[in-house]
Length: 79
Length: 212
Ligand SMILES: [Zn+2]
Image 1: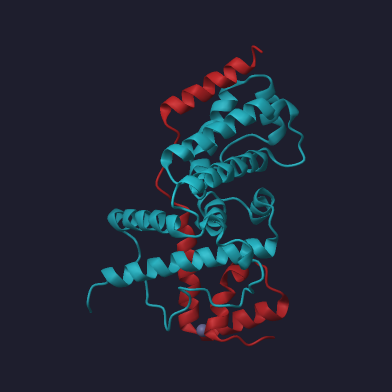
Image 2 (image 1 turned 90 degrees about the vertical axis):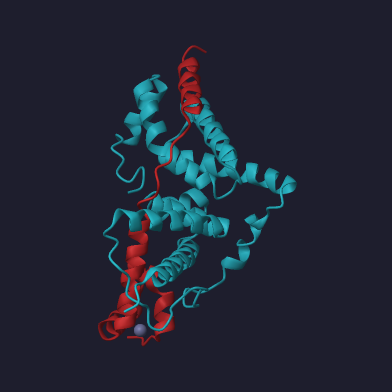
């Protein structure tokens, strides 16, 4: 098992959340998180950030662009 | 949620057959499910709303023209997004020749060799301060705005990766295929981008914190 400093751990959060760590690294991260409140909170905030990113302001094509594309699709069938 | 996470679209072979047969409902469904995400991704490369809309429009025109020749070597989504990225890059390169905007190449190769263990800017501070639960709609919408502004400041490759992954809900495999990058490189770009966004949120929550 590896031992990580808090700084090192911060660099591994995405790999940890992606399940991309090898066994010794994963064990090292888990052990660190079990005993370090700051890093536990940091990882929680990382997760919260990902959740917040997944809730963006709505975005859509302007109506004129959409209707132009719909007619382009329709016309293609007549070629 | 990402605009096509799950999305409710049928499997690719059904989609492709319907498009080839001229099924307008299916085309409209794709258009409405994916265009929002495509606009967000296009904005990583071009400088105005108008340019982003044109890139998305050109992408759909290429899809309409190319659907008969589409071979299922990739998913439809990956195919569409690759067309989009190419169109957006071209457009962005053209703009950077005429506009004072050329951060596009700056996060390129330099990013590749860096290890995951390096602490990116905006990384771990000692110790991180607790965040409030964003119960109120006002706070949630401020956070949304803050994130949207922040994403615009990220280097384009980081912005593209975090937009595809965390905003649009693509898998890492899809992102690697769309951007033609390795899994490790994808993870580095994603990690840097997430670290930056977390840092902005932390600064924001710190600034609105009630004195105890
Ligand atoms: Zn720690």
